Image 1 (cartoon, helix red, strand yellow):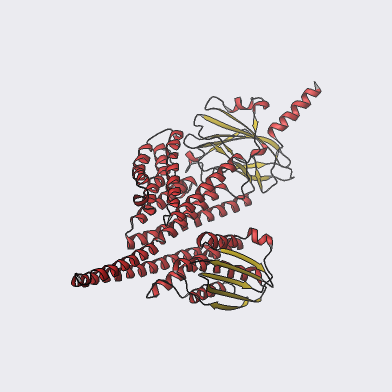
Image 2 (tube, helix red, strand yellow):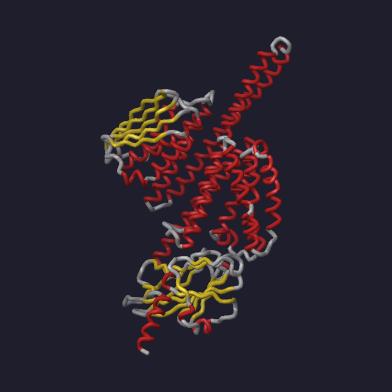
Length: 601
């Protein structure tokens, strides 16, 4: 009998794990708890307490995702222990803003919260409960979770009050930065739409608005800050989910010009918004998601075919969707416990959508160069027509030439105005980032904001040069690089660094913007890490053998293999050199660091 009791004790310990040490600043609870899924309203608290230990399951992951379980309740049983000789206060957070109802059974007290009680018992983004433990006290708590409108997901975390406050400040800061940047991007593209009247911008602005609304619902921001009450309508939730999906087929259609290269895909894309609107009225969320998933293969096929047919904007489209798909795959792997997240998985999706939106904006901006090429093609046709029909249609050609010249002047004016507006809107984004940075106390966060400001600023300088020039074929590269360097140096006033320029070639705008970003990253890295006080940095751009060589070197301490592998700036430089410029990147340590990019025009 003693052996049997000992075996049972060991088995129960395996099911529930150890107790949770409440002296820590943060405790991920789920690996130390048991859980069970039961039919809704068929088990009360007393019945749950009487369930044998062998029927409680255990999970090693920090998150438990069960999908749509509207007819079931998830019960979690944990044992807390206060090893300290003083009373402790802890905050229990269920890290999911969409869990419909969350009930805590603690020491004979029942406390209710959850998304469907927002504005009543729920005053935060996520449901939280205050727990007090006496000195050396150990006791069990139970959590009951149900989610009639969304997926059932449990991620209970036990915080100290100070740790929870710090966590909330960081979370709200990141959400503020994300929605602020997305809002600025929406305003920027609305301005471009007004001045270009390009219908692709119309559908892209609709898609951006849909993403903002969807992610504000996904993160709980919509209900917390805007509505201050729960969304308890299945139809409204479906509508929010479908909003970005309605616009993306139309954006794809006009962004990739499918009516020219893929007529069959074009007809399907035209029909898809009607299909999306029709499935919004489906009450069953599983069926809704399955029906919406049919759109993904069509969008993927459009991206692959556009790459195959060498559509100019296809690379931006593919990169943008690849970021979102990668984020969704990563979230799935994290949910399965295959990989461990470096930070909150919600941020993965936010960063992916922000990156996608930025890439799509860059792709739309490249359409300006397409307009320039169409203008040059019109010039060539005009010259050829004038040569072949000079005698017979001399007067007609004269009149037509005058009309076309006026049209070309208007196009040039429009191009310059667009560059001016792009520059102003980029500066607006920089100002918004600077405003956000002024409220930060975290040095790393400030440095990330400043890096983003410098990158956007380098693009802004190019557009400023373009709208000030009479021609936009090539820009004054040396002047452009010096403007970028001067702005970076202003951020490091304590370092006395000598700069040497050897610029013997000018670049086209599409090449200059990528080279400007590369110079921005490399000079910033040198100023940050290569020198303590004094140093020298040399920047050169030479043209030879039908290509260009861009070099940035310093006489600093050199770059380590670990820095090569982990530096975000170097990864960005490598992506720009290989994917955008289609060139080669070389890194040498020889009395400092020398980084060279070789590419063909």
